[in-house]
Length: 249
Image (tube, rainbow, N blue to C red; front, side, top):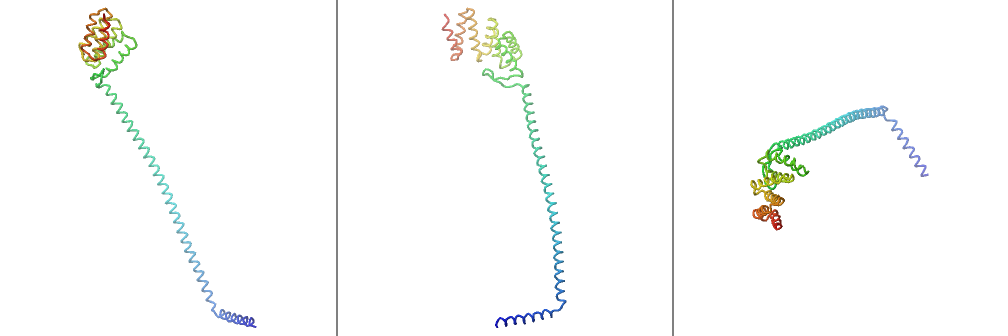
């Protein structure tokens, strides 16, 4: 009974609702459709506009990206060129430094140089050392004749050379090796007379004493050895002279 009553109430309500819907004017539905259609058209227009703007923005970004890539490439190229120029500058600076160093070295060969020879400092002329060394090499190789000639030439060419005492001493040795005892003694005596304080002077005296002993001049040799002991006391040469004195009978 109750269920049936409820169904009747639902049917009556549905009938009333249908009557109310039928009472709405027909043009109201048409107006809503036009508005919806226009809204859709407006939305589509806005969407198309936004899509166009988005495409334009994307193209702009792409163009800017391409330009940025080009700028990066240009920067990389400029950086490479800058490194090349820096390397070239470094190379040029080194070449210039080497050139002036070489030039200075070459010029110095033509200028007098201060040099120490046998403990004595003096001014050495260009070519002087080479000339002395060449004569010394001849002596060491046993070419005493040419060594003597070379030392004589050096002594004549460089009269103010700090090598003079040493060159004369070795000239005496070359003459001694050639068995020119008189000539060698004269040369060594010249060393003692001209350069009495030079380190080669006592050695020259000892060589003279040996010359005298070899020629049987014991008295002269003894006198020369005594001169060494008195004049150059405490030196190694003086000790050698004293040892030889003790052997002379």
